[in-house]
Image: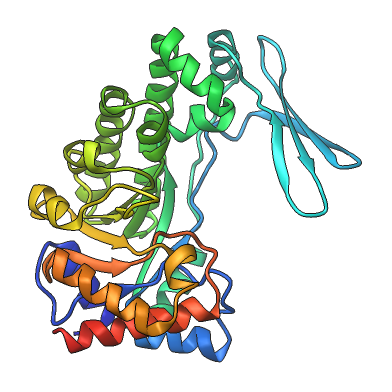
Length: 346
């Protein structure tokens, strides 16, 4: 099998010639370096690209001013301005003021005159698809509806909005999902045939199972159906503890999902997860990119990889990291060593 065939077989809940081993993106590895080329050739590579964005539409008016280490963005709305502030240091940057704080700000946000995107440019997707070829799969990033309140509210106000004003929260989710469905159809009509749908972790880490069903499973399943109706692959991303959410995750209807993190970063028991949802979802993971693959010696990573394959089995499973996007050349070499283990166990 080629790497692409191997991944798609696992995504379709089949048993490929060996368990696929999938780095997610290049991390800090130069794609054009010898290590970058070798990584693609010796593993079952997954490359993910940025998505369409554009929740506010093409008619929204916003302007940004920079003053020293502070960047202020003002969104004009018929009901009053919304202001976001980012502050940077010599090392990092952080958002110190979010544009929305209360349910009233949801009304402001939704009062912005909306003009939808009319087309999606698939050029970058097609270029990467041609470059990766049969050595892996390319996914088009697609943030789900819960990413909208998570983007415009601070984590604290995001959680309080769900508790204090769930109607406003769901109004924002439902409007966002309608717009995303339109964008998903544009993407599919442009020829994009594989997606990475992400955002569920905002509910699973902050809101709990009942909220997850309302704010993630139900709206995301509609997007998933849309993509499947056009013959596209849907790959889902959800960090954090997952065991309480397995059936809710599977209810979305995706083909594959990462990252099913093991303790202490998550709570995933691979054997139990496979028993509960493995027939419906290809499980991808669950070695931490930063804490395991990028730090431990190859022999130790190989030993852990053997354990994970024994726990998960060889059907509907992809051995991988946690999609951190931060790994280095050392982890790239360890991903290749993990692929050696998979070949030995085939």
